[in-house]
Image (cartoon, one colour):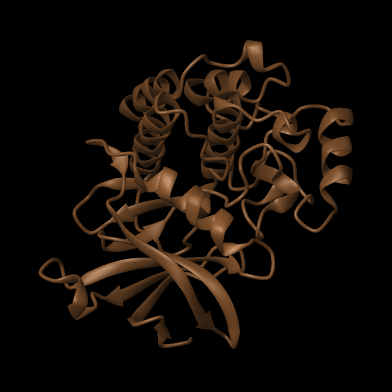
Length: 268
């Protein structure tokens, strides 16, 4: 484990799966008073995305503020990790795990509520004209204070996914977004894919992460939809609607998805 990113002293690894590393770090003294522990996400190598474009994308994302599902972002920059120049962002939260963390101690109702909080956070972005475009288990974080927040977005603009820097996993990406037709319906698809994975333990379309994007799109469009029989009825309906290939058949807002997930959690 590299023990530093920029001047953030890394104290622990929350998630290191090759997709989007999530690290706990000490708050640098130059940031002034605040919680001693913060979180740093490493978004990817600078070789894949120009810093100017990444900074504009991060700034738009960080401008969104709300009471639920959204982290308080501190700053972003370029640093070195594992002898590579990388883009990183930091947040004023102490993350203990993500929905992809094997060690996360959270029962299924708690996981569904965490996903619902992320859905409400996504809705805030949508209402301010922002598309997250990277919703997956790896970026839904659970904090020490009990909150759940949505981690950073892809650095692509939401319509050119081929410019992404290694995340989200292709198996959690809306086929419409792979085609270059991204919108809030794409985040809703990703919420459904994430819910499927959280409940079943595997992504709705397996074996896609190591194949080219065009091949992944072809497979998603040609193979039968994911089997929902293994999901409890209380979640299978909302997941099936989110994963509809036609965006018009999906829930209209992420809030609707959040409400259904919260209902499922209360009945678990």
